[in-house]
Image (cartoon, rainbow over all chains, first blue to last red; front, side, top):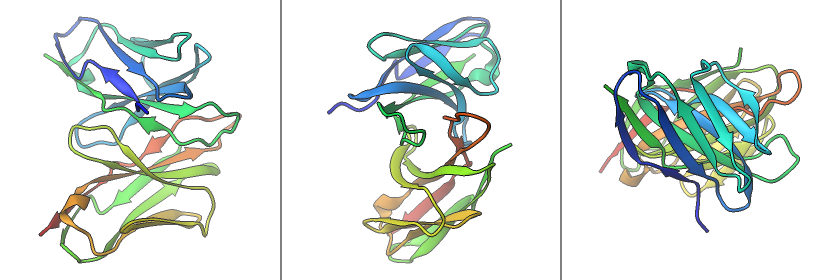
Amino acid sequence: DAGVTQSPTHLIKTRGQQVTLRCSPKSGHDTVSWYQQALGQGPQFIFQYYEEEERQRGNFPDRFSGHQFPNYSSELNVNALLLGDSALYLCASRDRDNGLVRTQYFGPGTRLLVL
Amino acid sequence: EDQVTQSPEALRLQEGESSSLNCSYTVSGLRGLFWYRQDPGKGPEFLFTLYSAGEEKEKERLKATLTKKESFLHITAPKPEDSATYLCAVQARSGGSNYKLTFGKGTLLTVNP
């Protein structure tokens, strides 16, 4: 059973560029969340997608946007990259259930370096 | 605002030397508290979910406990392969539905042979 997968694994961009990161959730999961983890810090919530809509958003600017596809996979887009956007970007998925407390399972992450 | 504080920031143990990691939290009602393990450059790996004060869960050398204000991760007779960063996260009740996890900064555990 494949877990959460993310691509690419590493990415180098320059300031001002745009980037798209991709995530496929664990089999049987329909909800995808994105987190940003700076070096030495815990993950910070960016947003969550459910039924192809953004359901909740953290304290991130509009430069961060996302999308969820009918097959539940998701993309994270970041525009006008800043040096401070350099981080490990994590995708997490949770299973189909109406309950509010469900464990989120994380992918391996995409390491983004902005020069 | 929800807050999670983990201590110590780093812990170095000898193989077989038991210890505990602390996670203190401030939330407007707790839906769940989660422990994850993270190896360098990798995504967090799920360990435990705790829902209410008094609850305990165990897995191999790890045992997680929960009170109304904090959680402990007890490590019994650790081995070098237990070396990792241990992350604590909470899911809180705030307003209507709240789905996000709020994480602490983690405790970096090193177990020397």
